[in-house]
Length: 271
Image (cartoon, rainbow, N blue to C red):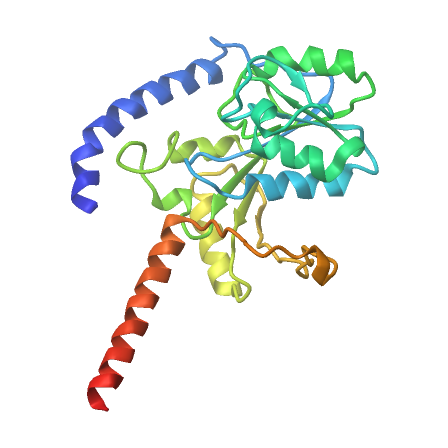
């Protein structure tokens, strides 16, 4: 893998040139970033792959839903529709995407859930449909610079921090590490429970090399709740259950199964 990354490094330089020019145009006001009258919080990252955006958005919803009229705005990744949609009872993951549908199911009428490829285009539609809206959560919008958010939250995975990565395609960065300086808050996600003070300080120092001065860094992990029974009583149970697991889990299961078979074979030979 290391040698493949080295071979791809020249393409990363080209990618860096393109992304650097785009950000330079925004930073120097050749491209317009719009300040909105309504408060906006952007939650995103500078790496491809999951960094825990959905749990953070849900945390912000729970934190502010008693105080604000919230609407989430996502692109609606992998949905089968186009344009602006304000989620309703007739919508599902196919029409608005997986994460927005999850927000809609969990919070129902407590918040509004919307999707649109062009977030700036979507804002007037949100305010027209839900005029009481006073907080919009921009999901995965760190690179969407047409809107200047009230607060820009950057997430980075504890296991794959952005400061140790390289630009695409040699690495996983969507843009240069230096663009962490746009963040108002940085959250290190998926941290282990036993994270110590010395390691926190080390990570904080690494982040501060790229962030603005005095930008706070927070450390977060996910704690799962008590499992809830699928069936209330035996009469509701099914005779057949289909289990779907990821390829990595399947591979680990296969290795464990193979080791178990070898152990049994060795024991049989001894007998």
